[in-house]
Amino acid sequence: ESSFTEYTWDIPGVWFHENDETMTREIVKDLYYTADDGDGHPRFSEALFAAEWAKKKNEAFFIGLNTDDSRVQLACELSMMDPELFQHVFIAGADVRMRQPVNCTDTARELERELGCSASHICRRNKTLAEEFVELMLSTKYHLDLPGYGPWSHRLRMLLLSGSVIFEPPRSFAATQFFDAPLKRRNLIVRFTDATDLYEKIQWFRRHDDVARRLAAAMHKIGWHCLTHESVRQSLVMLLKRLGALHEPTVGKARRPGKRLDDDIRCVIGEGTPLHAAMDGFGEAADECYLAAL
Image (cartoon, rainbow, N blue to C red; front, side, top):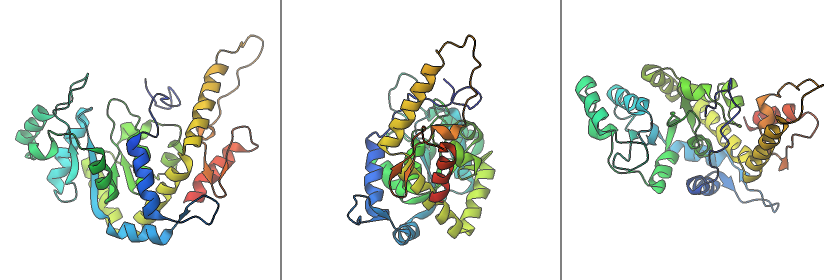
């Protein structure tokens, strides 16, 4: 069940376009886009995005369940470094009942004794509602994508749509989904090694806000254009075709080398023309899709 590149391409069972992702897409359409010119496609506005970016808080954001011990540990360390910057980095839903225990209370209390962070701040009893989650996500500039039960993340798609600078620790950064490998190769998703490294990198972006805004706008456009219903459908269809090809008889013929991960990307950009794997130069076209969004 790993999505690390040396083992698999992706985890196809991660769900797409659930309610909170659809909600995010609808909200940012009103925030960042102007009315269409009659072709049915709303137009991204750099001016509107810049205006919304100026309203966002220079703060970090992560709210999630205690599905990995590293989450509450990082929340504690960050809160000790800068309580204001990391006030929206915490673990929620301590009382949520799941098949695997997610209660962070004991761990948070132990960290409070050892490091001095507030257990009640980093570990909240109630689960954060989707509306509150999306509101906080859209009002902050720096977002963390942390591993949970596995290194894959459906959170990442919402973070892309929100228009933010996204940071990942090594475990998340080493794992790939069908759409994020080019972002990591180009360092558009920012890798951090520990709490200190994350703090220093966020401080750099705070000092270079124009760079942060342009990166966030590019990430939004990638999420908006390349993760539509059709692009996700095309990717899953291609994955199933490739899995089926693994069962083809190989006696008497050499196995074809695997294609680059870029071939798993379906983008709709520019004039709204979808990219298909059968088209000539698909890999180059997929790269151009990402570069066009930058």
